[in-house]
Length: 108
Image (cartoon, rainbow, N blue to C red; front, side, top):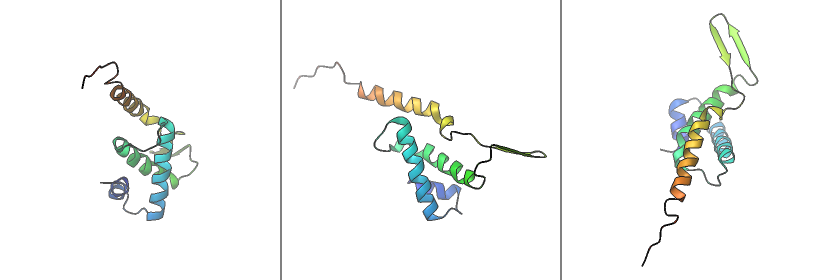
């Protein structure tokens, strides 16, 4: 299942145009954060969560904190910050896979 289909399950009211824009923005930002040129499938779940958060945030653009009796709204400045541990694990696994055959001599 692709990213857009997964977002539509969580956010059925999102328009196709907005969904496409948020998907492009989220995947571009993740690629820039990790220094990637292509978006790997392993990061799809993070992209889905980021797109949903971006969609939720769009209704309250610019709110830093809002309190109303027991209801409170607050947004993180960096929407990708909560995924730093996941990003580090991804990069570590990618590096480990790249180094798996390093120093191995094979005879044909």
